[in-house]
Length: 88
Image (tube, rainbow, N blue to C red; front, side, top):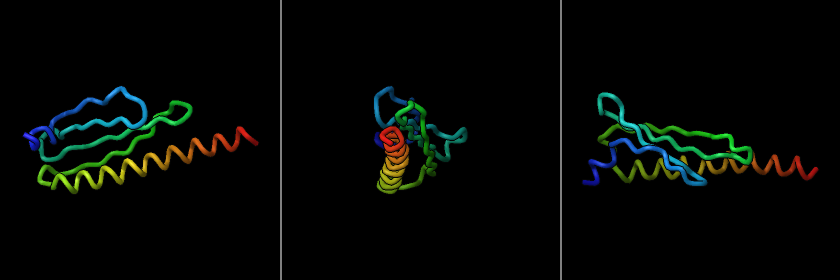
């Protein structure tokens, strides 16, 4: 059952912080994960990662955790720069 859900479509959530969605390709050979996070101006920033369906779940999880951190760091840097400019 876990395999079936890993490669089906998942619509983006509407929560705060990190939002993600999963889109299978038309031929079903791969799945694309999209991660979004908004900065202080509510502008969305996105990272996409694609995986073939034969990829190990642990590998997918590892890469997605790295992408999540990368996106968080990028948006936090933008927010910090804006705070520093506002304080100056």
